[in-house]
Length: 132
Length: 248
Image (cartoon, rainbow over all chains, first blue to last red):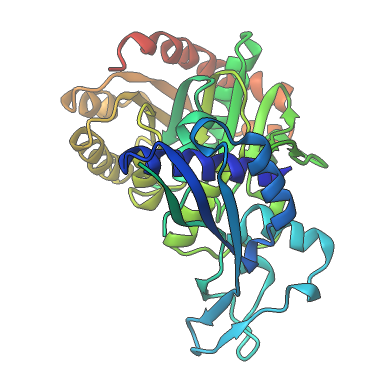
C-alpha cells in the first residue's frame, strides 16, 4: 500500500521534530491529508499504528482532511474539483503523484491545464504534542 | 506545517551504492540514450541497476527500452518493475502518452513524491536520466541526494559545451562530484572538447560516434547494445565503475 510509504515519512519526520524539541514521549500527531491525493485515512491510520515504536508507543494520530482548491493561472478561476468524476485509473495516477493532475484536469472555465494547486495537495505534518 | 516526505528520502535510497545523474546543461545531446545504454551495460555486467527517468515533461527512456505494459507494484510504496534487467521508474506509468505540462514547483513536488514512495531495494547503481538545464532538477537532486555523482554529456558543438561549462561551474560551487564528460554524436576527429574538458580539470570519459543505426535500435535493447554507440558506452561504463575511487 502506498499509504505505508507516506506513514513511514510521517513517523520519520515526527521523530526528527520530537528530538529537536527534546520530547521523551509523543502523545498526539496531527496530520493534514489533502483531497487531491485521495489518501485513505483508515489505511494511513492503520499503517501508522503498525509502524509506530519507541516514543510514539502511546501516540494518537489525528488525521484531518483538507479540501483541494485549484486556481487557473490563465483566467484566474478558482475551483474545487469533484474527484468522484474521475475514472479509477486516473484517480489512482493522481493518488500516486498528485502533479499528474495537470495531465487530466483542466480549468472548468477556459480549459487550461496551467493551474496552481493552492491547497489540499498531499500529506502534511501539522502538529506534534508530547511530554519532555 | 511540515512536509514529511523529505525526511524519508535518504532512507529510501540507503540500499543503493552509487547514484549517477546523467545530465547536461543543453537539450538534445543524447542524455537519455547515454543514461539508458549505460544502465543496460552495467546490468549486463552483473550489477544490480535502477534507471529513474526524471525528465518528467519529455520522458523518452521508456521508448529506448521498448517498455510496454509494465507498471510498478504497490507494496508499502511503489516497487519499480524490472525492464530488461533494470528496476525502472518513470512518470510515464501515471501519464501514459499524454502530455504532463508541469511548472518548476510541480516538477520538484513530483520528484519528491517519487523519491518518497519508490522502494528501490538494494542496487549497485541508480542511473538518473535528467532533464536539460541547470534549474530545478539539478538543484533538487543536490538538495535531496547528498551523495549523487554527475556524468555530463555534451556534443562536439561549442554551443553545447558553453552550457556544460556553466553546469560544471555550478556543480563545483556546490561541491558535487563529477565523474567526467562524455562527448556524444562525434562526427570527426576534432579534439576541441577533449582540450576544453581538460581545461576544466575534468576527466574526458570518451567520445561516442554519431551512428545512424541507433535510430533503428530504439526499442530493441539487444540491437542497441550492439551498435557503435552501445560498444563505446561499454568502455565508458568501465571508467564509470572505476570512478568510484575519484568521487569524494
